[in-house]
Image 1 (tube, one colour):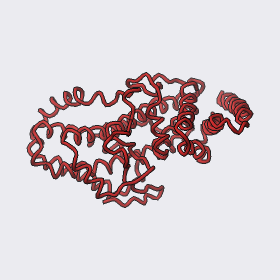
Image 2 (cartoon, rainbow, N blue to C red; image 1 turned 60 degrees about the vertical axis):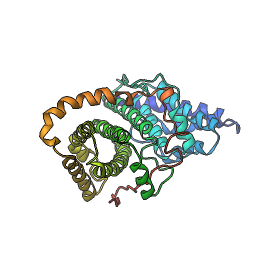
Image 3 (cartoon, rainbow, N blue to C red; image 1 turned 180 degrees about the vertical axis):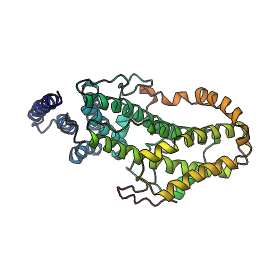
Image 4 (tube, rainbow, N blue to C red; image 1 turned 30 degrees about the vertical axis):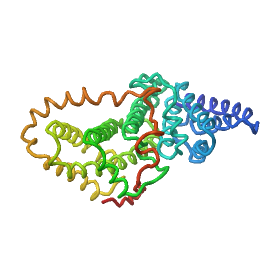
Length: 358
């Protein structure tokens, strides 16, 4: 059954690519050229993630006009929403993740405003099922989780005012810390909560498939692991800011902060297992020490865990549930945002873990 499924997938790939190649032979058909690259990047083969050369062609849409970028994003979304194959869906989601991380602003912007029905199912994959084989069934759970994770990533980016982990530009660390220090307590708490929520979603990553597809899983783990590093960098800055403000936080703000830090600490073990080797041990140990230090500095709440537990659920459900609702009107827009002309300062991440932070 597995061999038959693979053969059918190869035939579909050859047929669709052949048709697209004929149509894209017209030098004026730029959108068809992107369509062909998408087909080549999203084959039915579970053993190969999208090739870098195809991803580069798609990212080049960010160097053209807004219409060109919109055409490329529309082609990716069309591929994602019309396929019933788990491999094709996962590879389409990997492309979306690459746009968020490496795309130019014009391409990211078109992704953020792509028409959708809104709600918690922006990518419309919560009910995805591919039952052709045991492997496709396992990969279907990855499709559902990965789509939800990317929805969280877009939602967090909307709250932060920039695309988390984007490498498209940089900002000096001192200048960025000054920006964070200018935030109100409410904004700082809201961003902190969004980042913690993103890490909580990352913790829900499925186990590596037993039946194959490891290269796809490894690629996704790598991408999400880089987001993890970026999120921790963002949290580092905000937790240090909370240290400076510990004596002036209101009682309600302190409760809210402790609730978020408790949720963050609940992710520690799972994050350490899934993303081991992506960061230096001393760096991540320093981060968790900072989490404990901030909890200690806000004073007196450790003895009121029962009260915090009762009120924490109310804070999480009443104040922040709207952060996951992404629709056409809620897209990640930057034209008038407070970080519209800047991005992050980024730390390099490699397979040898060459991270030098703090």
